[in-house]
Image (cartoon, rainbow, N blue to C red):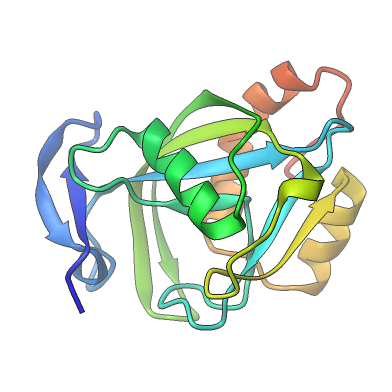
Length: 184
């Protein structure tokens, strides 16, 4: 098995080195570049994925459409498109930058740490094109704001979901001005 390397960054997002993926998430973590994608259908429902049970980090929990890490030197936008295709079997119909957010979140379920400089992207997807890789996602679901609230009350979500979703909300509201998305 080959090592997957991540790009380490400072608080301004400047590259300062690389680290092996799992080591960057252990023992306090190392700040590294990541991305989070939020895709919606034409009616404004958000695409969620339930992470596969074989994932090393946050297995079996619900989360945003797609998230991951660019390879060292890979632009975050291209990594977001690449991983969305790899995980969900479809390319975004539209994808645009929605800002960045930095966080340091322990994951009590796995004892790993998400210490990330996260590039946020929002866009649209065709529900009929979604064909998830079962090694990546157990399930996918397009949800309304009320359905998201109900799902969050009854099922575990990734530690990063509330932080990245709140940071992406201004861009979501710009893309869907009549939507009533909140962090709820």
